[in-house]
Image (cartoon, rainbow, N blue to C red; front, side, top):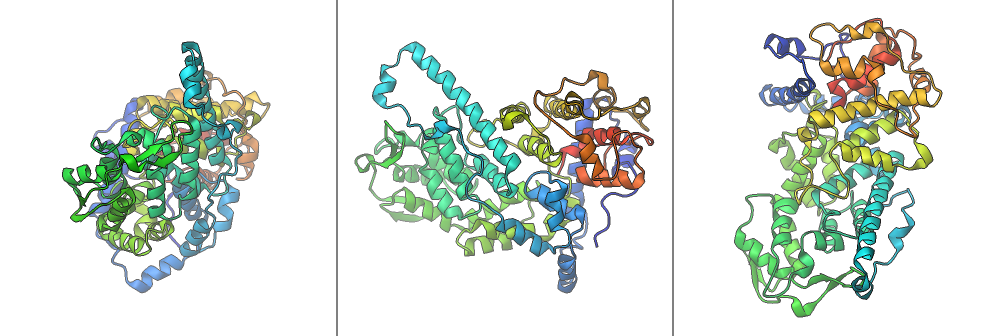
Length: 549
């Protein structure tokens, strides 16, 4: 059995050392720096600590792998690969071995969304003649309507994330949406983004080669990277460059000549002007010889994609990106190499790569827990799932708005590189917005006649330096924002799972249970003893550690 990640203290590991080095948390931004410094410190420890886990004898490693998962391990697995998990989701994984748990997780993957999409996704796009006949007012009306539909589509996807029986499927759909970005700024009709989203979900855990070929000719992608207008004599190099640099090989594994030659191969990939469906036009395709990565021939676009897939760098690049998504921001080439080799040998079966990562020593290494920052979607969806938050009329559009406010506007990536992610998710503005969202959840217990999530005066007394963020955000309920319309949080029912009530004073055992339930690592800030369970939970959710996974 692994040692507990939550020792019987309320100060994060290394906090005293940081104080001795003169780091004093006195502002909201300083609290952010503490959180990020903790993550970086953990990474530094991984790089400098002897690799005892990696060099362990094979039989000892097998014994660790065969050790049954405890509730903390099970919750870690589900949170890292999906969203924050509630007790009913965690329960089936307790007692499984790592291998059993990972296989069960992968077996539950889905290829289609369960949430019915908006009816308009099946509407045909107005024809060229119809669009040309529009007046200026009609064009403005159309622009407003498509914007409204995009917001509705974001709400649909967030609802799917909240209700899905396979959070891993939605995490991987999010991953591919970031990896193969397309967005509202260049794709006017959201029907096209819905179809791309369905494509990404269909192949999210399928075959990367199939996904690459399909998304390359996807109408939304052809619009986003200007491929639809590429023709013989005037090839557009955008897609040719990005497919090498961002989608397959990575920087440093191709030349400008490779880009120029490959761009010729993609000419003729265009869209029907009336339906925006993909079509190949041989009249504008360059069928001459091209030289790409040392190979010469009259290649078309699919043949060039196959050349990219044949390069070992592609398997390494994709595996490394998945490592950053699920393990840590610091890839370990030594551990990535054998996983990438198996990935390539499987002809790019995505489950093979994920299984290798989820069963790797690094994935389960204590030093890699709590070192990744939750994305806005993970933060909002995780809170709703973990705390069984209800929302009005099952309309998740306001929740999608929260995700946007935190910096992740679904279907609208900032650029072709997608969202920078990681520590970039957090700044003084987004951190404050996240904390206000948590306050809204607690206010929602009062707005719907549930037990108020009250605090008392004692909770304002913090040992050690007192962060302003805790003083203002967690300890003064009078300053809390109004509850979000329609949100419902049954605090009594949630705390009852831990045999406590909002007004009860939790004993040490209950406090540790609550910590394990909501945090990946011990809280960074000290918590005053003799507070109510309601106040204790709120302080945990306001702690910098709650931003981590």
